[in-house]
Length: 198
Image (cartoon, rainbow, N blue to C red; front, side, top):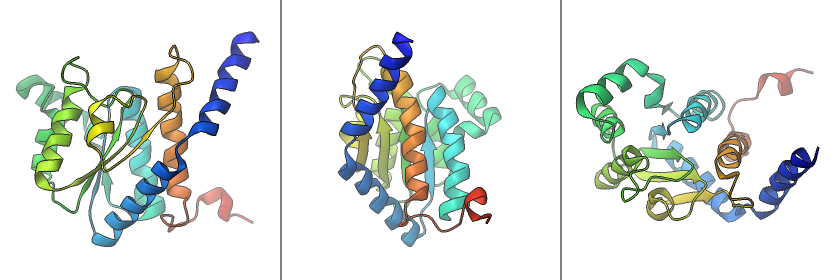
């Protein structure tokens, strides 16, 4: 019970310290994206990749934003990783998708990518490519020193309340914030099923 109480208290602390202005910034950038007819590309690895897949569903269905996640195509992802290398796997996918200036990357990551530490170099490479194309970048990450937090046009950093639980809290709050975004009245265009049943 002690651990359960501690962990849940950490969740409460994170909620109390979330940067609401950073969330609002992401909402506004997503609204601009939809108005301009841009596409949304979710990038993440590990648990964050699973959140990317969920996000694609919700953004397409609930907000009417055209969204994709390269990690949903495991055949192409593994072929590119095998033949071309892990670092360029997302950038190559975005090149084939003809990433344009009106498009956006949405990075879900614990660290946000760090070339010096060789952590998620594929995210760093993709962000640099997006910037070269003039596309915007937003993210939800757990570290403010990673590449995403430094380079993004809008980024929410999940507060660290316990250095032993950065990964589980970041990945859990990615899901919380993504659901906040698709529920936000500025973005939501379609009702969710159970809320529409009377």
